[in-house]
Length: 319
Image 1 (cartoon, helix red, strand yellow):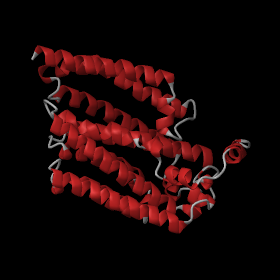
Image 2 (cartoon, helix red, strand yellow; image 1 turned 180 degrees about the vertical axis):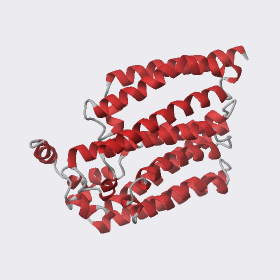
Image 3 (cartoon, rainbow, N blue to C red; image 1 turned 120 degrees about the vertical axis):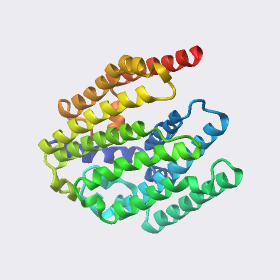
């Protein structure tokens, strides 16, 4: 542990020396393009409530992805502005553009204003073009309001800090369904919530084991043992909600139970593998990176995807 902190602090320094400062690159990094895949994965899940996705449904889902990408980019930017002083005490986050002083606060605020204008234009344009009515975009507004409250203090409240972030992913799912005029799949919403809660709890556990509770005040309300109990609870809830969603999915119809039995072992293996990476291998600081770079997880996900996709095609051909 004695050499871990300095190593993290030295690596960004070498990267910055190798590449000259670039305002465009720093502004791009503020909106976390590497995290946009979350919107691309979660938002279209709202289409699973529809029996036959049509062009209009897909158009609404694409619009929802764009809207939530802009909204989440705005949230990342605002959080970096408000957390700049605290980030300077973190071995990795102190190299973020605003905390490091490479992007001035005034420039960041101007960039945030541009994102607000783009988001408003996207929602208004979708309403005018008939892609989705204006009333269908309340999840984006709720997401922004929730994150304002999160940034202004709720992120320092233990348990609320992780539940709010997980709820943001449920709002993504709901937005995808509403924008596509598709029913919201209820068990899937619970599955997404509990899965995201598990990943966020895993990130908090990694933060505690690496840096203690100084950087994030909410961590004072946790212990590693408590987080381990919450992780198991979230994993079990995810597995149950997954099985119920597949069983009751309109996509699989009367074959839902068979598909659930066929694919559940791979879903359970994926959950267990993440817990192994987190607890045994001390990973989990960046859940997306940990999962997408793990060959076992990727291979399991590919097999699971083939089984789910193949089952959906079989049911469609048989109907």
